[in-house]
Structures are given as C-alpha cells and as structure tokens.
Length: 265
Ligand code: SF4
Ligand code: SF4
Ligand SMILES: [Zn+2]
Picture 1 (tube, protein in one colour):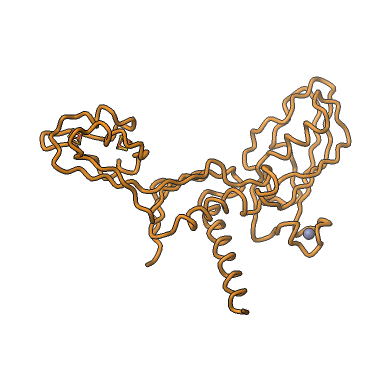
Picture 2 (cartoon, rainbow, N blue to C red):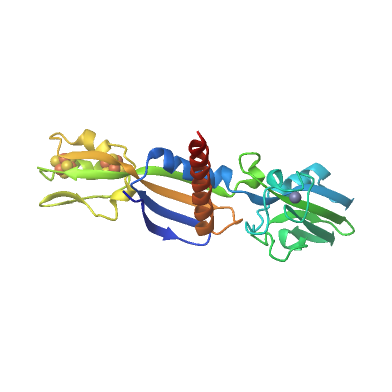
C-alpha cells in the first residue's frame, strides 16, 4: 500500500490536501512536525543601542521575535545541532540591523538583514510608532530553532486534520429532514432521494445530526480510518508546499533513525 496525496487547495501560505492510506499516528506525526519540528529562523537576541520610543526594551524584543523570517533550510541549521555548540556562528544565525528616527511608523521592512535571502516574510508588520525626535537603533540576532521550544520558531499555524467522511444513503424517502438539519448545507434532496455531491463530502464535519433526524435510518455517516483531510497555514518562514515537504522529511528522518537503531540490535 502506497500513500496517496490529493491536493485540494494550494496557495503560497496555505494548503488543503487529502492524505490516504496512512495511519493516524503518521497523520499526527506530519501535523506535529509542521508546528514543532521544522526549524525556522527567528529573532532571539536584541542589542539596543538607542531606544527612546514608548516601548520598553523587553516589549520591543518580544515584538521582533514574533516577526516571521523567510528561512533557508539549506544554509542554516538549528543552533542546538550546530558545530559551534550553541555559541552562534554564520551557519546558525543571522544579524539584522534597524536604525530609525521619528516621526513615522517602524515596520518589519526597516530591518536590514546581513543575508539578503533572509527577510521578514511580511514587510508591513508594524513594530512601533516613533514621534518626532524619538529614535530606535538596534541589532537583532536571529537563529534557527524549533517550534517545540518557543512559539517564535513555529512555522505551521492552524495545522489540523480530520478523517475523510464516508456518507451512504439507501432506501431514502426524500423527506428532507437531514438536509434541513445539516449545518454544512451539503445534503441535496431530489425526487429520487437525498444525495451529497462528491466534492462536498469532504466538507462534512461528522456531526451526525443527519443520522439523528432520519426516522428510517436511511443515512449513515462513517469515516475512512486511513484517509485524512489536512488544512495548514505557514507563518511565512516557508511556502506552504515547502513546509509540508520539510515536515515529511522530518518524519522520514525519524523513521530512518529508528531503523538504524533497530539494525544495530
Ligand atoms: S454528519 Fe453533519 S455535516 Fe455531515 S452530512 Fe450529516 S449533518 Fe451534514
Ligand atoms: S432524513 Fe433520511 S429519509 Fe429523509 S431525506 Fe434524509 S436520508 Fe432520506
Ligand atoms: Zn552555529
């Protein structure tokens, strides 16, 4: 049995797809990898040279830490696994500087990165508004880390899955009660009976209200134990496609690690 992937929607930042012929544990592994185990770059230290804005230094540092940075997983590696042993070096961290004077709003696009490939994913994140004469001068150090250690490194947001619904309708008398009850509005009633369009089945939330209101048990709601509808969004550190690919690689790496250990027994 080989796994199957059916892409339903794909944009730069989000995706919806069906993964079939996999176990619940595998589906959960992919979801977990997207939120916790795919490393990203995020600002961790800030050296403030001048800050006369209304924000305290800590507040500024927190805001900066939550700005998603486009991450290059080929060039940078997690600091905890780097040869520098966590000291910080060009393989695991990048410096961004910012120098601004009011009046005006300081945005994420005002951060100047030492590596042109590493930029804020969204240039329009407001950081602070400076009044006339107020100044902000800083150097921020971003490094590669894992979402499991802090939200600042979490690449996947709103990542979830549900089993693919299976709905069967037999010996229906077309009373229409199920259609009136369905919160997703996906049941159509025709003379021949109730039916759900193939594309709409996936929208079913498995609430089973249709089953409850059918007096003659004509409609049955079930789900495929080995097929999952995934929805996911990326914070911008990766494209949605790359985030899924990286998550799959993380799961693959874990399996290979386990096989190596088992081989040695
Ligand atoms: S289980 Fe709920 S969402 Fe699905 S078809 Fe029935 S009423 Fe609609
Ligand atoms: S409630 Fe039952 S009998 Fe009535 S339309 Fe729905 S499936 Fe058919
Ligand atoms: Zn390093």
